[in-house]
Length: 274
Image: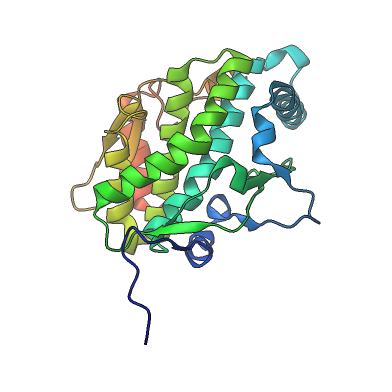
């Protein structure tokens, strides 16, 4: 006799959903862990010395790429931007898997590995993972599960480590998490329009729940389009890098620039604020 269908409380294998998420782009892809591939436990990043090493490496790369002197890039700024990139790699695959793949991976810090990035997104790998079937869950249930697992799990632990090592404001760091989730929801909406409504709804609900409540406002400029955008209530500090400017969700970006940015994205050009 065939097994009964899974209920939302019964876990399933996360791999098919993660495979579906990986088609959305490199930020949504987690590799399969192998002990022959040089992976390091993600828990290592809770060590302040390891974090300092990674931020120093990111600063050196940035200085070389932009031809900047050593003292031109404040360490705290690089740390904030580094955390933003790492947060994006930890929330994008679960969001994509839950929305496009129909199952939310249940990954703890000990289930994930990393390698030093050479270019592009942080390389992240996973071991065997269970997942929560999400296809029959409503938007709030999917979002609550995403926040409780990814955001309140690995992301919070690493946020606390960055905060302690670099004396960064928790408001800035949680704003970075909100920006990472909004960026993922935006790419998902643009890449897989059939899933844009759920991606936008998950983002909107996440910004109502702690710890992301109060980090920003979710805006839907065109009521006939599912695409949402975040307007942060703080800044990732990227503007303090010479030539950095402000981002398309930044509290320092003027309302007129934000509106131009939204129109450009909705028109398919994706040009950032001028």
